[in-house]
Image (tube, rainbow, N blue to C red; front, side):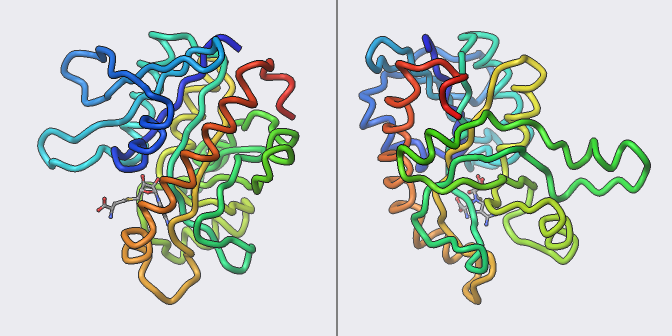
Length: 241
Ligand code: SAH
């Protein structure tokens, strides 16, 4: 493929991969918080777009709105062959997750906080946007595969738990379904690569686990993301499954 776009939410998640790629900052979009970086990997252009800081709140623009906008601007500007939503996520001990595991998206991207009990809208709320078939890639690079489930909350309430059990989600985060929504609209395949910072069913508070493991997980993410990019670069999207 000629171009891969990597969309990321937090500066600290992006820092190790930007260093390892030797990526250079390039101009982004006036007034918008997104930060674009560019690198070349064996003739494949890699654009990393980070959501950037929220001007008023002074924190990284995590969550679905910034992710969808970021994906749209980067996709329109660079027309990538593949979009990778990369970052950290929660996993579940009862599903075999361990801190530092890196997952590749499987099957579909779903939302677990859009409950709309009206025929038609219920399915719309869940989304079920397609994930690019990547079982071959996962096997070759020794990565776990799982359905990624998205909401705009870090914690998990009883309603979330019910919806996640129904959809079979195994990777919980706050951006992927929004990226996949835009990807489907623009007919650009989407893959998620997510490193586990916290175990949702562990007694320690998610935020504490997240803060303790963010640095390590971001390094694990960078290591695997580089392998994923090098696997994808000489292939076509159809050859990742
Ligand atoms: N406390 C952090 C905020 C991080 S929010 C801070 O102070 O900076 C969590 C971010 O990591 C989101 O971008 C989300 O995609 C991801 N994430 C990691 N673990 C998660 C979980 N268990 N649930 C939801 N999102 C999670």
